[in-house]
Image (spheres, rainbow, N blue to C red):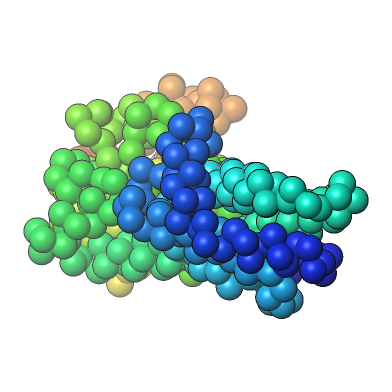
Length: 400
């Protein structure tokens, strides 16, 4: 934002400014006193050393008088005001406090000019006032531009640092206790204690509702969320909470699909938790949106994904003859087998879910037994059949 052009100082204005130059030390004391007695809500300089604040006030007041004395202003913004804005932004002083101080300083200079204006008429006094406040406005504009630019640079730097810390945590650097302590301090997370790691993906939009971190924070749950190229990763601190209670808070925040690790210990366990959360997510197909699954709920599917070659053999050896049937008959028999197993191998209980008679269920099971050449009953058969059916439901699996 370029500083607005202000009226050219008249000879009278220049003379008054020159007369006040010697009073800059006293004007600085008056501005410091005004800051100290003004409303603290508007002039919070607790982060600024007193000598630094005094130097800034002196440079500001001197610059006003220099510009009133005829110094040509920088068309792109006053460098003194810009330097003050940059410094105070780095120190975390609120912008409102800076603007308030610039107005207080302008008032003090205006009063000093009036004290020297005994032989100047009302018309010229108005001209002095116009030039004077135009100078303050111009310097305030330069201050705002510099302050906001510095603040934006700080935000970007903080984001880069946060991104780097999260990537280091996912890479396992928190096995170093010193790094874990520093990362926890900078991310406002406890270095020890239990964590859930969440990995979320969205097929056609953001995987999470806006403000997930803030929404969890309202309930006292600390978390940090990190966007990667292919996913969003969340570190959720349990802090003596049950995983189930935290998952209940997480589920409404999911827009895409997400996998959650079992609880891992401390930031040192984040890399392991991330791998387990990814594994949980891979058990969910891409067309299932708004779904969060915990690995604790998906161990059979996760085991199958971890051993794809063995999974193919299991499916082929366990259900091969059924899978070779025409699609309609194949799907009916597979559905019947799955419901029968889910109903503790009870044909009577499976029938209502399949919308058919109990005898129909028994006939279909006998057909499967004949095709497979083995009995369906028995603990080993139940395990193998259940795993094979689960494998058919995994993402990317086809019956054809």
